Image (tube, rainbow, N blue to C red; front, side, top):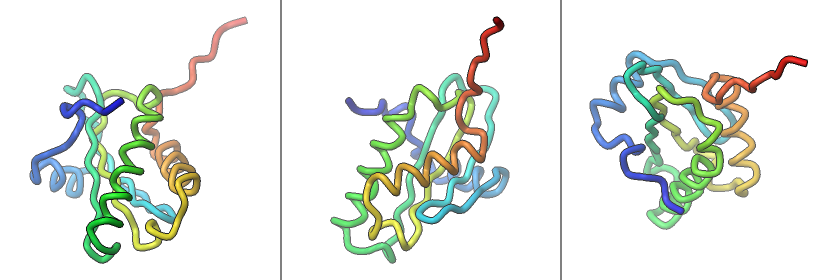
Length: 121
């Protein structure tokens, strides 16, 4: 199942706005930059894989893995966020489980996930 294209950030001005006005946190394999936008009914995301990570095959594999991580956790992500996931130089060496663990840890630390609902006894 693919993520709908309406969730993808496509404009460079959106990336620049997140960089200028948002907050970011670095992990072992990723940097997660986020910006809260009250008018969004869903979240939007962008992916960055620079040329220093490797050849096109390596960068495309990383992007596929990053999209899959976001797709798996789509239900947990709070609406109203624009975020960019930037792959760091260590990312091509990591396996999928390590990449997912690092991204989830960053997302929780940044407050990207929905707050767990606590039911009253």
